Length: 331
Image (tube, rainbow, N blue to C red; front, side, top):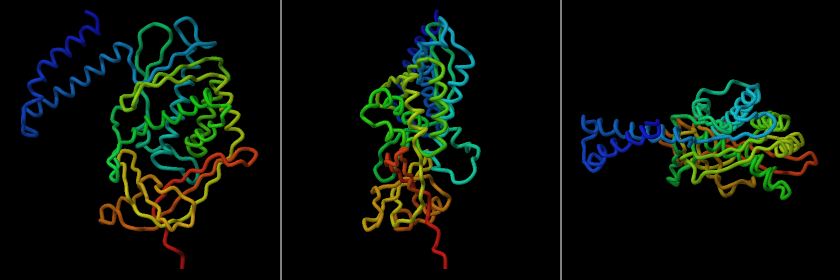
């Protein structure tokens, strides 16, 4: 019996056990309830094991080109590909969770590493395929204001990276790439993306990514080509980012606990030309606001505006980020 057949048999047995329990009304934390929840957890684990056994990874990359030899790949190139792609995802995730870091470069917080570290999965022999799984403990983020769902940090970060490569292949002549690139964030994600692009541009190897994350609406296929990587290099080398901080009146209206992000609704009488909602990471003073019952109350907030410009000073994109409560005016 093959591994796939064994897992299929175990799934059928578990399904027969769980079906009558699913309809039963059980007291929470009773022995029967605990047993049912344990069986459900195991059932989901077996389903995931079956997906891996079939080669249905959450994210896969297929490689062809100079660094691929029959069904093998150059180890140094693969190591650099994984480490630099991971560095881009880490940097974008840090930006999503905590915003632009002011001051000298720091180590990434453990929260960022927990929410954005990939795991390499064993694959079957064939045309070379790299299987990757995202962080184990992650889920969609709920907002207080709309009860809508947003992607987990890892999935949002990979989406932004994939958007860049998808845009560079499809929309280069239409000029949408600079705006997509600006969504990466500040200098740190941009520099990581530049290192990743340099690797792809100099090794003559094509990678095709297949994204099957359960948190996303549909599977996605993205090409990573040398030509596209060189275009990214050209653009990143010719852009600058300027940041300015200022205060605005607004109201704290939404929160996503998974990535520690708040939403502020900007007051209509604001002098700045601003979006209606600005988001940012949850600083300690904002967490205290919730505990003290001042959530959904007017306040003065510190906002950061990042302007991305081309080498000819053309404005490519402007992004805004909530940094926290504005400091009191100096006497």
